[in-house]
Length: 362
Image (tube, rainbow, N blue to C red; front, side, top):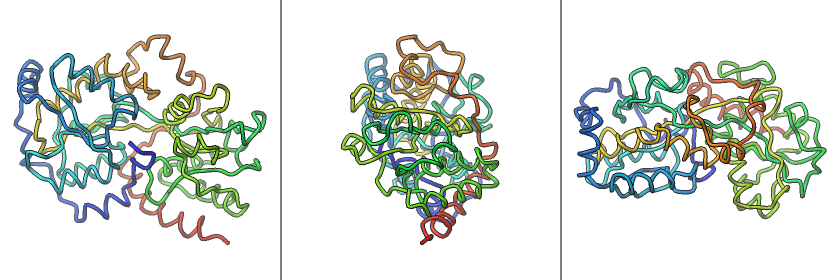
């Protein structure tokens, strides 16, 4: 899953076209939710095919290996963006080559439901998931969270100058990489986080737009993508990314002390990523088994191993794993989007505002 994987409703709308109403007549809706039946039939299917869930993102490899060893179900993935995942579900339709499940930002979950692309399945862990992170009818539920963070390359910016707040970032002298706000969900949440720290929210994104417009006017916005390759080559100074990406990139590069990672103390945004089942899944029972396993204790710990904070707070993460995550005390001023429908509409405006009010500045 590339850094641009989680793309916006703007691109999704363009790709998927006219919205369909309702969620009836789903080909996999008639499959049983009984766990014993799911296990039996999933084993018989023997395969699960995902999109946008590669081994290296959030330690998905740990879950796929577990599912193979415990249930004898093999796995394949094609990495793609959230928009591409939903387009894939729609384009392939009912086919033996159809993907079974994908991993999308919960902000685009409502669109996937309206497009009649998903099957509802609450799993046995439904009550353990916070209300902000799930659809009431069970069409999507987050498996893990991401919180907007700063990652500073101390080879390019001194440790003492590494920002710990949006206020710090605004007064710095370094270049800031935020990614493509016109299409990238991670980048859009970065703008939302800046807006929240300055009095805004998903209904009022202008404080974030104005914040980045000032950086652009000062010639401080970098066009360099915050990929692990670019970080390793030293082509970034300060990047705004999900916390699990920052931690994972730092681990992959493995240069002790090189990167300083912080959650902005004056406000950040936490969102989730949902593992959704294609209504035309070629292996619907294997899809249900995988989604359930992801929300199990073992599946949640697997995600923590990949630096993603599990959606379930009732699970005790082993100390050896938790010590590699940012401390809980860093997540004091965190905002959860209250309406994903509102945020979806805002992202369409956001793409336009970014072009005109930020990139358009001379």
